[in-house]
Image 1: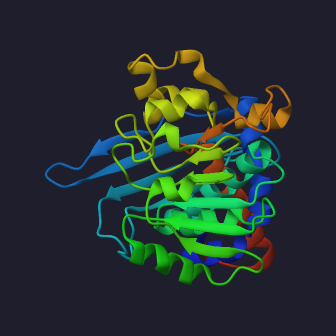
Image 2: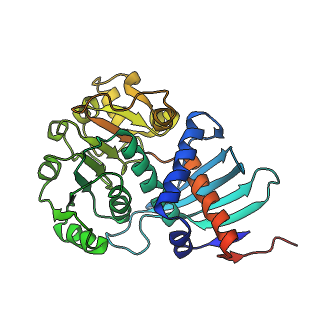
Length: 328
C-alpha cells in the first residue's frame, strides 16, 4: 500500500489530467457503473465536530472501491488544518487489497475544483469573460486556478466577508496573464455582468439573491453540502436550469434545492439532469445564450476514487509516496 501526502497529490494530480479523470467519473456515475451509498455523519459527543464517511465503488478500467473518512470541525479562518481533515483509502476491486492511503483535504479540493471546471466547460457560454469567486478559503483558491483556463476570461472578481482575505487570496493566486483581478465590496457588485460564478463559502443561510443574477450566467454552487444550509435563495434556484452531480445525493442533501421545494417555489422535477448525462448527450445543457444555468456540486465518492486511482497510478509509475508492506 502506498501512502500519498498533500505535497505528493499536488504533484500527481495536475489540473488537465484530473479534469479528464472527473469526466470519466461523472460519466460512470450517470451510467451507474458505480455503487454510491449516501454519505453518513456521526456527531462527536460533547465536541463541535463530526465524522463523515463516504464509501463507494467505481467501475471501468481498473475498477476499485474505497472510503473517504473526514473529520469536520469548525476552525478559525486561515487555520492551517481547515475544517475538513481526513483520508481516502483506495482498494483494488479484483483482489480486495489496499492500494493507497491518500491525504483527504488536498484530494477533495483538487477533485472538487476539477469537476466544477468540467461542469463549467459543459454549461457556460463560449464567450464568457468575467469570472466571479464568492468565498476566500482554500476551495476558492483551487476554483480560481481550475476555472481560469476553461474560458477566455479577462476579469476575475473575488468577494469575501473580509476584503482583506479576498485581497490575500488574489495575492496567493499571483498575476494571471491577460486577466484583471479585483476585489468586490458586496455580492451584487461582484455578480454584476458576471458570466461564470462560484459560491465556495461556509454560509449556513443564503447570501446570494436570485434577482442579482444576470442573464446568461453559469453558476456553480459548491460550498453547502448538507440539507440544512444554503448559499443562495429560492428565487436563484428557480431562475436556473438546474444540474447536479448525482440525483440521489441532491435529493438528500442539496440544501438550496430542498429549501426551494419545501417552500413550493419549484417542484421535485426541477433537476434537469446530472452533469454526466450532459456529457453523454442524454440531456441538453445550455439551450440559449441568455439562459441561467446552475450546477450544484455535492461531491460523490466516484470523484474521490477516480482522483485516487489516477494519483496511485502516477505514484507507482514515478516511484513517489511511502510504500507500506502488508505482509504479516
